[in-house]
Length: 91
Image 1 (spheres, helix red, strand yellow):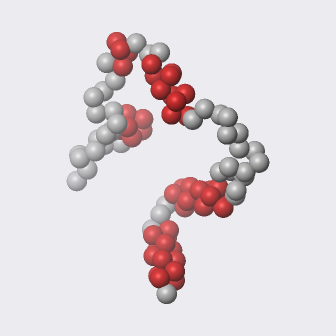
Image 2 (cartoon, rainbow, N blue to C red; image 1 turned 90 degrees about the vertical axis):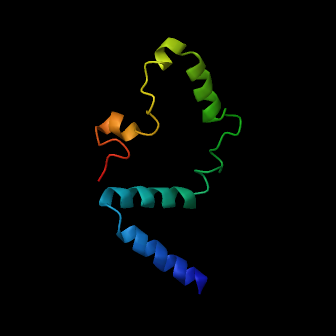
């Protein structure tokens, strides 16, 4: 019974999404269902984790450049990328 309730809850949430969001959810569900995407034969376990690569790249950026970024960048990334209102300013 819990499985049926979970399915109905998921369906209700899915129906509230925009078409673009639905596409994202479907792509993710297909990716999760494909074993080769998450560690199948094409997965190279010797590859360095992305967070390590990004940390190395970030360490090469001078502090003077980091200081130019807005202090609220992480809270308002969509504002800076897409010019939507800043978080907390929506009525």
